[in-house]
Amino acid sequence: MYKNAKVYSDGRHYVAILQKKNSRQMRPQFPPCPEAEQRKELFEKAFQENKGKHRKEKFKNIEKTLSGEFETQAETERYVRENMARKERNELLRKTRLARKVNLNPWNWFCTFTYSDEKHTEESFRKKLCQTLRHFSHRRGWRYIGVWERSPEKKRLHFHGIFYIPDGTMPENMTEKEDYSTKAHRMQKTLQNSYFSERFGRNDCQRLGTKKEIELSKNYLMKYIGKSGERLVYSRNVPTYIRTDISEDDLALPMDAENQKYLLFDDFHCYKDGEDLGKICNETIERCKRN
Image (cartoon, rainbow, N blue to C red; front, top):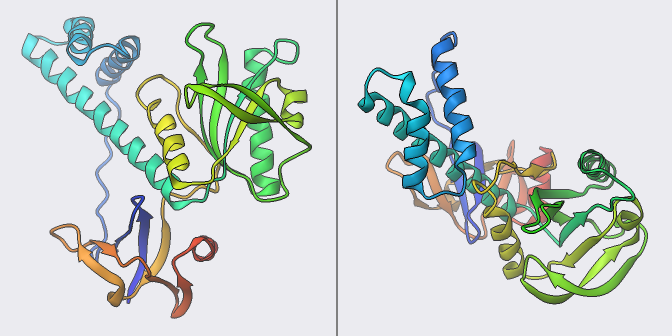
């Protein structure tokens, strides 16, 4: 039995990361260097200003901004190259984290919230909607992953999110309307909730019933990682992986040279201190979270 393994889903199968026998050594911490901090700030600002541009053009523009910070052109190029590679690694990690969160948790709604000028300013809309969603997450068990976006033409702020809303916890009434979907790029019927309409303005809610619909929603959120300066918004109860003991019999295939990562059989069981929590399913995942 392998104790306290980390298990995540890649969308088709579950993968276990076993604990290493030797504890990980902490990296030494060094005091920040003012010169290095200044260079990093300049790089981050230039990187944001060049978002959306082709990689080659972006590189040249950032290199020009930092040219006075180094003694030689070669040093400037190396610094920009290393930090752009860092940005790309971080973007990949954020996408991996999003995919694992979506794959591990159940989802049943995709919602878009927009504000009315009669009810909110952009600032108050952002603040109040975040407070409202946190309230539903804490009191009613909602889960969500979302992103703030501006419309292409009017640059109006709105919020897209994939949600798990337990039965009986959606407030007030739902009204069916036919309108243009920015996610599907076509006319379709959506549901509007009176609670959010009264407090914020327009909202569009679409039920997610199939894996394909959930995958499309995940891809819709995925494209915003790296596209804008906005970060994804997660509720606190959306884990990336679960912790569970794993039986050797449930290990299907090793996935790395160190035999620390294993593909699991689709019907593997979760264990905690010798207790069989059951075959993997949504209910068992919930039990693992509580444990």
